[in-house]
Amino acid sequence: MKTQKDIEQMKPFQARAIIEALRKGIVPTEYVPFFTVGRKQWLKFVEEDLDSFIANGGGKVRFINGDYGDGKTHFMSVIQQLSLQKNFASSFVVLTRDVPIHKFEIVYQEIVAQLRGNFEGVGIRAAIKHWMRGLDEESLSALFVSLREVPGLGLDFVNALIGLLQVHFRPSSEENSEQDNFEEVLYQWFEGKKVAKKDLKRFHIFEGLNKTNSKTYLQSLIVFLKMTKHKGLIVLLDELETVLAQGTSLRNAAYENVRLLMDNAEQAQYLQLFFSLIPDVLLSEKGFKSYDALWSRVRTVGDSDDLNYRGTLVDLHKTPLRQQELVDLGVSLRKIHEISYRWSAEQSVPIALIVSMCAKQEEMGALSEVRLFIKQMIRCLDITEQGHAMGEANLLENLLESHKEMDIEKTRQLEPAWDA
Image 1 (cartoon, rainbow, N blue to C red):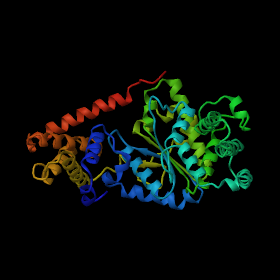
Image 2 (tube, rainbow, N blue to C red):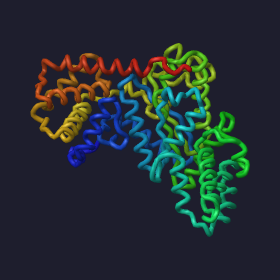
Image 3 (cartoon, rainbow, N blue to C red):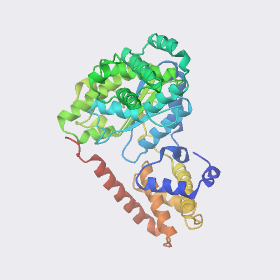
Image 4 (spheres, helix red, strand yellow):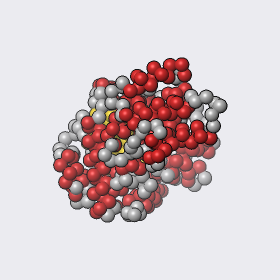
């Protein structure tokens, strides 16, 4: 976690943006280091995988298990930040009504749309533009030859790159509108969108994205990222538990795509795939066990009561934060709230009160729920800053109100609203 000195250098608008995001249960990606407490053992072995396995050509899948509020999304954000610092490309995808796991093409589109790496901006379009800016027009002919000789780079992917370069470096005397149209067609192909075959044929591209060629697409993407000086690709798919709210046919299609993505990851090089899920996905009758082709692959995941930090399952639920770690988080939140609203919180919300807040949460049996603690903390700071002192007697009410907010959020997240 960042030090108090780092937090003190924040501007009020930055602090306010963090507080507003946390009210919604979101930790802004760029501020993840300010909230990273605990989980050091898990992160140690994730880092070992990145350095010693994925960067050397390995492929791996891991599941991040935890109840709602255990900090799965935050943990995945920490992994993304870690991977970017180590010069991997990374994509963080939240599975939602608009990005449902049962529609593979849409998930792939979101993976390339959320791509981040050693380039400005987000998405494969930004990555390709960054690569092209570093090229010399005089050496294009030699580049075209060398691209065709790169192992693992699919023929359609090569032809799309060559076509884009030819259009990009075309003399300016030619029609700009036509050039822009050709560029857009090629970028949309890279983004996995539907493009008319007649528009692709002129570039000798014969297939768009589908399940059958998904492995080739993914492999070509990784090879391109390696060409552009990345160590590999880290894909994080959050909130897989939304499949539990679907009907049987869509749920089966979703699990088939999970199996497909696992196959692609484990057979690929320089790729690690993370899924976040709640225990019900592993344990309930609507979970993985309802789909034999997937269950045969994952049935032993989480069987042991012993923690295996190198295993397929990252079990956050079995490794909750300690009370002191939550207190440290509370102190950081207090300082950010102070900066945001320009007030002095240390006397009104002392460490002793934060400790008592943790103790109440532990009495409820919910100490592992980091999101609940954050909600409690922000609610307490809001009320106190507005002139209503919160003492020990008010802590239980604060906890129950915060828990009620979490229940509403959880119900909204899991409601069966995207079966169509």
